[in-house]
Length: 295
Ligand code: GRG
Image (tube, rainbow, N blue to C red; front, side):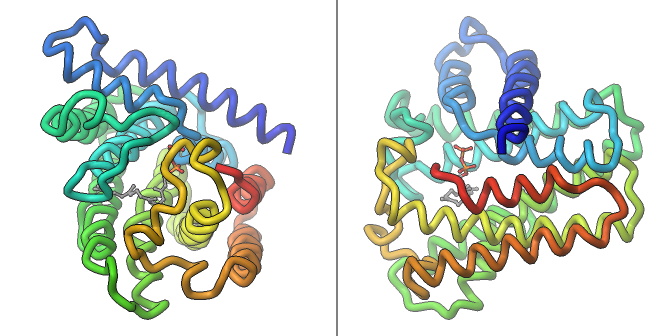
């Protein structure tokens, strides 16, 4: 776990350096917009998705410099989704990443626009990444657009999630929601790392298998943390799922069984990696990190 800590610290440092370079300063007009973007982006998220891009790239032997812009872009897309998710029309939350949410600190219109900038800037960053060939840039843009905006992507998953509030849904429907809402971007991050490394189609397929388990694991642990952790530790409002009558894994299976399910899904994720003829230890450790995370 110790070298994973070092890996995350180094990943956060390099990604934040890139983000710092891409995002306009607080002094850039309109200042309120840029202050709002920075408020949410530099609030201390785990940087899990960019870490996944770097870890997959490292396993497949990519140059780190080739991975950084895409990793930063994915963090922008993720942060945009959090800013919009917190809006009154969606989850209506006051706290995110240990701070008051973007729309509470600034206002709703600014939070919507901050999210809009983060999303579009992400695609600009990938399209202008001089380290990558035009072909790979187009593949990455397609991959990220697919993960975010198609009927099986994050936005559609969010719609399904909102529609399911207060309703009794089946475990299959719950999985479908999370496969899109949480899993699509996680899968997109892992696949992006493999695409930049010019992995084969078969390898890409295996990375998808691993990442889809990892996405499910991320959601199960997110649901568990919502009922087992405090607001102070999470940096976002604990107990929100039951307050908004959301279907969750602990809601279906209880806390103990959900913990066992998480362990099983983590094992399945690591087992999928065995099909890859590379050193995938770091990826398995990342799955373990998700299983054992405290926030
Ligand atoms: C509004 C388009 C749109 C999508 C929203 C991200 C999302 C989709 C909803 C957030 C609600 C939620 C709890 C999703 C489950 C998993 C998740 C994305 C958790 C937050 O990610 P972390 O834990 O956050 O990686 P940090 O702050 O560490 O980056």
